Length: 456
Image (cartoon, rainbow, N blue to C red):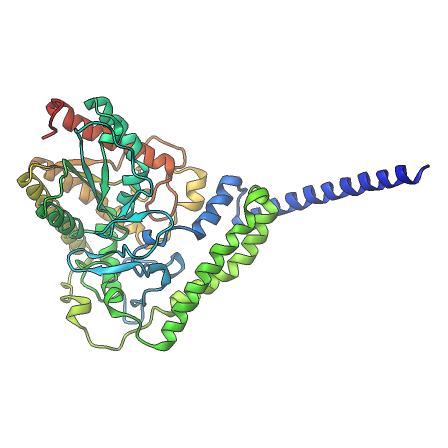
């Protein structure tokens, strides 16, 4: 046997062993991920976990607690329960606004979106000029679900309106005046300001409901007036001491380190379960450290109640009375938006957003049960108790002339995965369905009066 032939066989054998080792490593990694997650995961689900580390911090409520920090009940807390914490680097581009509570700082770069001079999000790549002077200009109000819809649901919504009016989709621009954590009266204040200064809108869509019911109770846990912007004390309080600054700085450092390490599974290794397993094992201790630091920043304050940071003391109400008060506040704010919009010749549409915690609202897929439904989450009982009240009050809004639309049953017969987290947010398919539904609502409202020159 020649030396060359022997070397060739040795090389082939070595390559076969290497390939076998890689296959065994990948199979073992799949099993390891199954043990970590409690279920088998595919490439898309693994990519979603990496993307969650890179998720735009702008969509978090200012000062929002992580799931590990969430109080398990909506009951009002004792003094020992969660307190406001200082803003960390993930919230550093959120700034106090004199009318809206807070917006984004246009001077702080954002990798996902442009930020307008008013502090709201806009597309990085604006739609091309439609080549027509006619427009249907839509403004969207609400919290993070509404902001996601304004961008993720625009295409389907515009397609429905285009079919009804004959305008190209690019002639149906959407302006997002929504922001993560917004709740009434922030929507009312935002649209009042923009209409008062003459911003040209033809349709205003207010997509809300969840924040108006859940976030007031988050405020009550920290001694904050339920009507105030969420975590107002955090927004205006700054960092109380050097130790808290150190912890906030470490959280910021870990944000960057975790984001950098997600690149481990890029390029040739994007679909590698082994690479993803190694990344998860390296990332989890960092995530645990961040959660511990954030929890430690939820310090108890010994300072007396201050009006400028906490607002007036909340009324002493039992739970059912508190629910009724929040529903009434939501309704009154919507009626005010309707009145302001009518005064400016703008069509106002109020849409009650769907949520997975409303019984009967959606048959949950196996993936949703694992990743988008937490039976012990603190807001579940709030949604179960208040959403029926919102739906009933919505019917009364209709009787008063407000164009109100209940979309809580939009997904009632859809079994595929639509929710992306345990809060309320939708995935791409969910936003597509929401965009189609709202697009049909807008089209039905506009088509009868549309004469090719005006939508009023």
